[in-house]
Length: 67
Picture 1 (cartoon, rainbow, N blue to C red):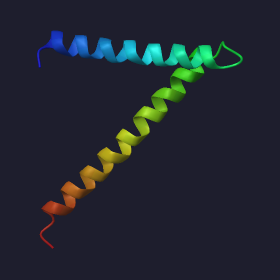
Picture 2 (picture 1 turned 30 degrees about the vertical axis):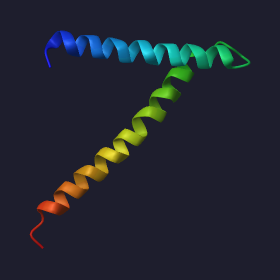
Picture 3 (picture 1 turned 180 degrees about the vertical axis):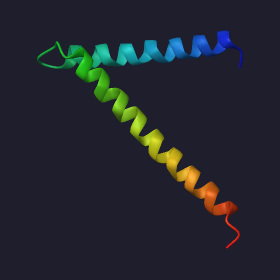
Picture 4 (picture 1 turned 90 degrees about the vertical axis):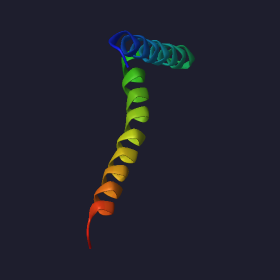
């Protein structure tokens, strides 16, 4: 991918995260916890990706193991 495609993709992801966070903030009864909601949403998105990535790395290493 070219740098402009990466820039557009990252911009759309950030825009989506911002909209998701704003929606969660507006639905909360206290209403003013934007950054805590943002961190929580990012954590909930990143953790499964990290776990899946680690599982794939482990499976690739086991596949290359001659034993």
